[in-house]
Image (cartoon, helix red, strand yellow):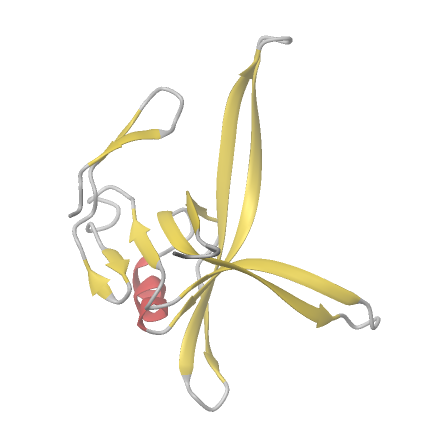
Amino acid sequence: MAHSLNKVMIIGNCGKDPEVRSLGNSGEKVANLRVATTERWNDKASNTQKEQTEWHNVAVFGRLSEIVEKYVKRGSKVYVEGKLITKKWTDNNNNERYTTEIQVNNFNGAVIFLDSKQQQQGQSVDGGNQRQQPQSHVNNTGFQTEFDNPF
């Protein structure tokens, strides 16, 4: 039995095109994304619709980064599955800073492109292997309520 689990799943829109770079001597590529998730609700007290957007840093490694570089653009709707990591670094003023990001690699992560086929030719990637894009239904709250069983 697992003693802990570190798994993150988000559905959101990319804020800008991926930034892709090579890591050190290994030459492995990493694609960095900024993905926005927006929660909307009706405030009963003021009878108005409210919303809150969270921005997530996503780092995609290996073959997945190459596919993300090719197909993901600013505004693309994506499903991201990975693990949460926190990095410690020192800024120019010698202050310690922390950055939290979702890390996706070939073994324990997935990036699924959710745009329509006209926008994105149904491309999806899971651990470096392509699979069919799941069909989803969105109810009036904006949340997906049904998925085809991929198994």
